[in-house]
Image (cartoon, rainbow, N blue to C red; front, side, top):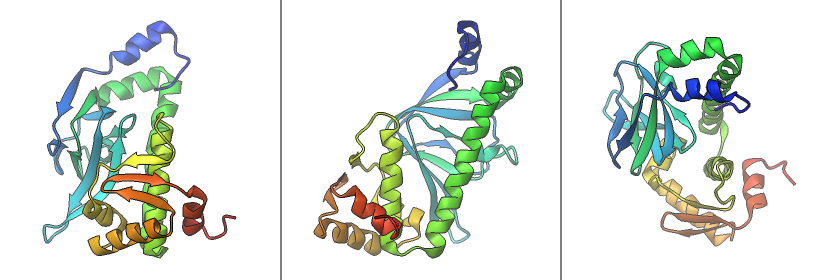
Length: 219
């Protein structure tokens, strides 16, 4: 949330949060087609968003972590167009969107912040489209790992270590790669000494090497 608010303004901002909700691992926060009423600020835990194809297959569209907001997909048509599933036990703050809109009109700083959140989601979706359209498997996985640790580091976590909350299959769905390709690419990075992998634990040993894979022009 934006900084610099007066105490009384912060009280109004806190008033947006009607209640908190505990989501167990594997449970849905909302489903595709559900009416859109609220945004959800993730306090703890990890989520994945996904859509179902016509043949029933799941297509992962994103991963969200503590400190991020989920539910923006519902603003366009007043209905959610994806499923949000907890990848581990999680806590979210429920913010009714009508309250967010009302307070945004009163506080320009909050309105700008909401716009930044929406813009960030657009940029993230464009990045995924670029990954799926033009990049080799090694480039896709390198970009994914770099983005993940960058987001975690911005929230006070290590910039070189991460415990993956998602499965290799979910990573493959998100990046447009087969499970075998994901596993093979992880192994390749490990054999080359770029990362260390122990089941879901990943330590980035050579971040510059990952950056060079993602962008060959990086020195």
